[in-house]
Amino acid sequence: MNAVREPIVGGYVYVPYEGYEYRVFYEEAGQGIPLVCLHTAGTDSREWRHQLCDPEINQNFRVIAFDMPRHGKSIPPVGFEKEDYRLTAKFYSEFIMAFCDALGLENPVIMGSSMGGNICLHLALNFEEKLRALIAVEACDYSPGWYISWLHHPHVHGGEACAQSVFGLMAPQSPEDYRWETWWYYSQGGPGIFKGDLYFYSVDHDFREMNDQISGNVPIYMITGVYDFACTPEMTEETARKVKGSEAIIMEEIGHFPMSENPEVYKEYLMPVLEKILAADREPAKASAETGA
Amino acid sequence: MAEFDTQWMNAWQDEVNNDPTLPLIGKYFTTDFLLGFGDKEYVVSVRRGRVERVTNNLGIETPWSFALRAPSESWDKFTQKVPPPMYNDVFAMAHPLHGSLQIDGDVKVLWQNIRALTWMLARMREIPDRAVVEERATRV
Image 1: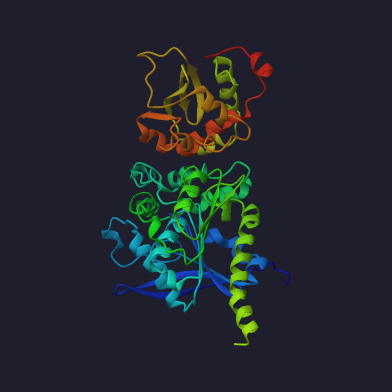
Image 2: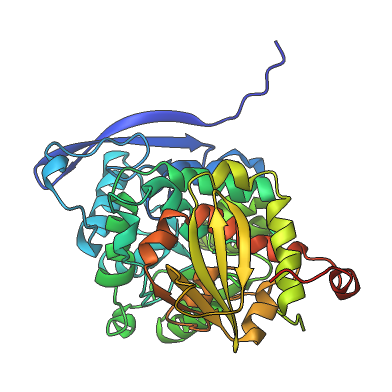
């Protein structure tokens, strides 16, 4: 058999958080520094399939992408049918860390896009001692305008409305097949989940008064595409100017979903960042070797 | 810059009605909506994903469900083969941060048909050169 196989392996882990055990799906590939990838609002870990499979990435990093509860293959908690789902910065940031703890990850790098990028600021503020670096993709301190009632309305097809509302966030230069694949992921979220995530993205995430509280001890790489109209390059640059230890990197000819809309272009910008993280990892070893410690 | 005159609207109507995908994704897209390019305004009558009629004679006989109005300069960017950032999509132009496009009226109809509508508007990027457009009789 010469079947083409990907190196991705999937699994389920029970993540305890505030008295409840969430059954969480994750995928991983590679070995090395843990690199935990966060999907965007209303979708799941499939967005990261290219980075998981890339040998140049997974040769030095243990790439892990997980589905937040209510997303992808992570089932919602019991009683979800009686809730109006709204993601908060508190739950999101603490759950990411609970997931890392459940897998026993030490000093992981967290890489998230969109809402996964915005949460990186909260992670830097509250969990810096547990993190190696943050790669905040399409992130800024405040991204209003997306908590839209039509995204969860009985008279509107949620799948098509959610998917189409984000389609234009991708660049016209990105390959058609990858753009429609991203559309497809968006069409598959549970009812109200995209909107509930956007509560965090556009409402609960207002970091404007907190930018200067980040110590700068953990490097934050803020990478944004020029076609992102939800978080423009200017918004990212403005935030990076205020956050210690951060660096803004602007990508040409790509939009809000770089990892899935155009993985080749995204890689050009991601690899130098990963190189910096690897170099920082080698530094202490080199330093201790020199001193004979 | 594109003229957004009646001939241009007819050329767009032809692109829409020759598109093989719209009858599939626009099967239930039936409404009359307003398109405003600066001070040029048209009501587009859509029936089952096809543009049946375009009129610029607006009045009480031409009601519309929702309206998309933007300066001609914005539409000119939107209709380019490779539109620039912030102008490649209706929601990009309508985003409160950028604000070059105004959406009015019964937006529920817009959201119900957003996939077919987006596809329909994207056909504006396939309108042939001006010389070809001018050869056609106006039907607006």
